[in-house]
Length: 336
Ligand code: PPS
Image (cartoon, rainbow, N blue to C red):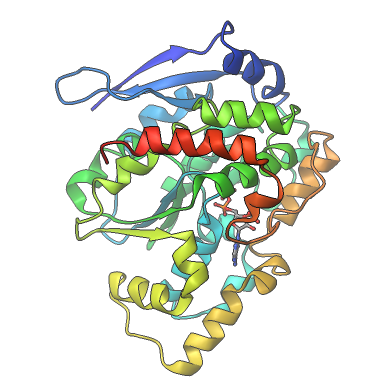
C-alpha cells in the first residue's frame, strides 16, 4: 500500500490558521497524506502531517520488523506516555531502577518524532544533549535499537511499516475522548510545538481535521478495525483511570507475562499514578519543555503532565463549543 501526498496551501479558514500559527523555525509546512488502498485508489480524508514526513516515509514503510518488537500507537495526547511506561515496566519485569535512570525516549523511542520537528537545522545547543542521535534522526535511532525494541508511534495503521501486517507485531493502541484530547493537544501545541494561535482557532483546526495526525476518527478507526486480531490490544485512557489493575492484567497477558502478585501490582500502580509520573523526570519530558522554552519556541506555561483527568475539558470548553463537538462526534460515529 502506497500513499498519495498533496501540499497544504492557504485558502480555507483551517489551512490559513495552520500556515499562519502552526509553522515555525522547526516546522516548515504540512502535507495531506492519503493512504492508497489495494486497488491503488486513495481512501479517507488524508492525514495531516508536517512536511518532514516525506523525508522518512519510505524508510518507515520499508523498515525491518523484529518478532519481539512491541509498539504503542495512539493519536497524540491520549495517554501514550502513561501506556508506554506501563508496557515497558511490565515487559521488563518491573525494573524500576532502569525505568528511572534512562529517560523514556531512549527506552521507548517515538519513531516519527523527526517527522514533526526539524531539530537538525536548530542551533547546536538544541542538539547538544545525551539523546543527540534520537533528536537528529528518530527513525535511524529506532531502527538501530537493540532487541527487544519498544516503539512509540502516532502514525495511523495504514502508515505503519509494511512488514507489521505480515509479521503479527504486537501493537497496543490507546484512545481517549476527543474533547479532553483536544484541550490537552492545545496546551501541548503551545508548550512544545510552537503553536501561536488562540484556543478557538485550535478547536477550529481540530474539528476540521487539521492538526498533525488528524483526522482523529480515521486514526482511531484505522486501529479499531484490527482490534480483534491477536496481536492488537485496544485500550482506553478512561478505562486506565477507572481501573488500572485490570488494564495491567490485560497487558501482562497480552505480552505473555505472568500476572503480578498484590504487592507488585500496588508498586506498579503507585509508579504509574499521575502524581508519581508528574515528578518522575524520566517520563515527564521536562528536559524537552525546558529546551523548547530556552530556544524561545514555547508559548505555553503548563508542564507536560498537566491535569491527568477525565472530563477536565469542562473547565475550558464552553457549552456552545461542546455542542459543536457533540455534532461532530455524532457525524463521525455515524455508521460505526
Ligand atoms: S503525547 O505528547 O502525545 O505523547 O502525550 P500523551 O502521553 O499521549 O498524553 C498526555 C496526556 O496524558 C496525561 N497523563 C496521565 N494521566 C493520568 N495518569 C498518568 N499517570 C498520566 N501520565 C500522563 C497527561 O497529563 C496529558 O493529559 P492532560 O489532559 O493534558 O493532563
